[in-house]
Length: 251
Image (tube, rainbow, N blue to C red; front, side, top):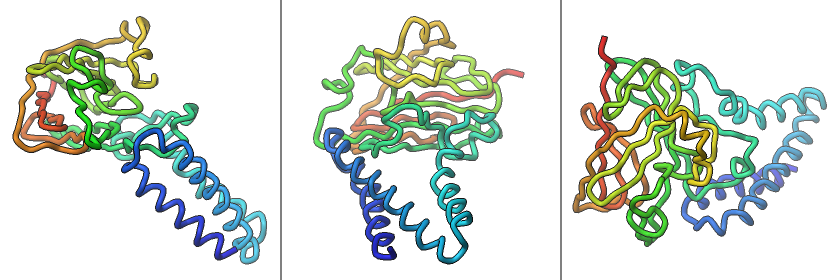
């Protein structure tokens, strides 16, 4: 059983490392192998632990270990807690259980002393033209990331590119363009991020839209990244940089 523990654990680690380097089409078979390794690891761990602490104790330990990632990411916690914990994941979606070629990324920062957090999928170029290409065409709605819509969690009332945003969660959609982007802030965050999920019902929960400028820089960035520069939230990918002004709400 110890050999099973070692092999299964190695498969899990390798899967997490390799998945972001693979195209999406290769992830389903890899995910099946990865989930099988997870089950094998849990069974082997239970067998080994049962010899030391009994069946009941072993079952409790394995259950807690397996369920902890779900318990930490499934609940939609209040903003002041959510900014300190891993990004939310909807475990009712099948894709949530699969390995991802665009891993979840997060950025924690402050706006005038109030904590905030951005959760977003991080797609990679892999030799492709993305912004303005067939994958992320200009003039079409984009989730501003991958998988779930990019989500901003705020603990106070702030202003994003001139749009007032209350404390809570907002989805950050965009319509990219060659010189400027249209930014869309929407209070609906539970839908999958693809354009077809942006229904008329979802549209009714928009907080507002804003136009932000797009810049072209010499250096190309392989994987989508957000960072803070001064008072701006900056989207960086390929040779594109989009600055999104952040400010506290007027008192």
